[in-house]
Amino acid sequence: MSDAQNIYDTITNKIIADLEKGILAWRKPWHSDTLSSRVIRPLRHNDIPYTGINTIILWMAAMEQGYQSPYWMTFKQAINMKANVKKGEKGTNIVYADKMVRTEQDETGKDVQVTIPYLKAYTVFNANQIEGLPPAYYAQPESKPAPKHERIPSLDSFFANTKATVQDGVQATYFLLRDIIEMPPFDCFIDAPAYYATLAHEVTHWTSHPSRLNRNFNRKAWGDEGYAKEELVAELGACFLNADLGLSPLPDEQHAAYIQSWLKVLKNEKRFIFSAAAHASRAVEYLHALQTETQPTTTTKPTPTLTMTGA
Image (cartoon, rainbow, N blue to C red; front, side):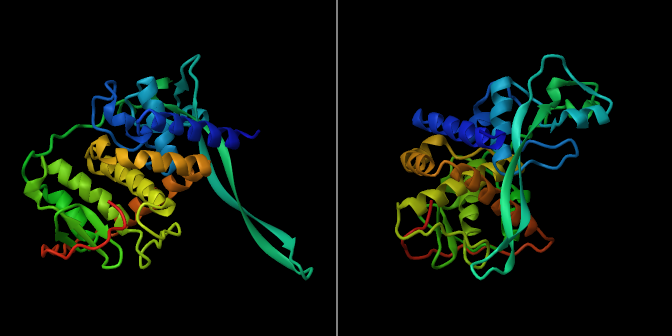
C-alpha cells in the first residue's frame, strides 16, 4: 500500500471513529487545553496557510501532541533556515495533490492527452519540534477578546464585501433558489462571535451557487446524501474561515443531527473527507478573494419561508 493510500485510510478511519463518539475531529483545536491562544490555520515556513485535508491533519496533530506553534516545515526547510529537528522527534505525514499528463490512445487509435490526478505523501515537523528557528516561529498567536454584544466592524466589512444578500429571518439558512441568506437579528444571538460564526457557515453555503463555485453533489431533496455532503463542506469551510477571522465555530450540538449522515457518506466514500476539505478550502479562498475596499450594504428585509438547501 502506498504512503498516500495509508494517509487516506488513516485519516478517514480516525475521523469516522471520532464521529462515532460524537466528536468533530476538525474542531479539536478549539477544545484543547494545550492550545491556549486563538486557533489559526497551520502555516508553512513562509507564512502561507495549509489548505484542504492538510489543515485538518495538522490541527489534529497539534492538538494531540500539544504543539502551540502554528508553523510546520520539512526537515530540509528547517536545515535551510540553519535550524535542526530535535533528536527523536517524529514528523507528521501530509499530502500533496497534483496532476500529470500522459498520452494514451482513444478508441480510434488516436493519441490523446489524459490528465491523471495523484497524491504524494511527505513529512513535516512543527516548529516546537525544531531548535534554532527565529523567535517568531515559536510565538503564540495573539488572542484578542471580541466584544460580547457589539457588532465588529472588521467582520461586518468582510461579509459585506462578499456581496451576499443577507436578510432578517427566523433561522440561519441559505436559500439556493432565491440565492439569499436568512439570519436571525444580531440581538438574538448569545454574543457577537456566535452571530459571525453562524454567518460564516451560511456564507460558505452561498459559495455553492451555480454562478460561483457550482457545488451540487447531485442533491435531489432535503436530507439526502448530496445534502449531507454539502453540509460537511460548509462545516469544514466555516471552521477554516472562523480560524482566519479569529472566531470559534458554532457549538458542536448544533450539528449533532448531521453526524449519522456524515458517517454514512464517509463509510460509503472513503476519500470524500479529502474532497470535502478541498471544496471547503476553495470556498474560503473564494470569500477571501472577494475582499475589496467597497463595502456594500446588506439587506435586512424579511423574506418568506422557503425550503432550505442547508443550515
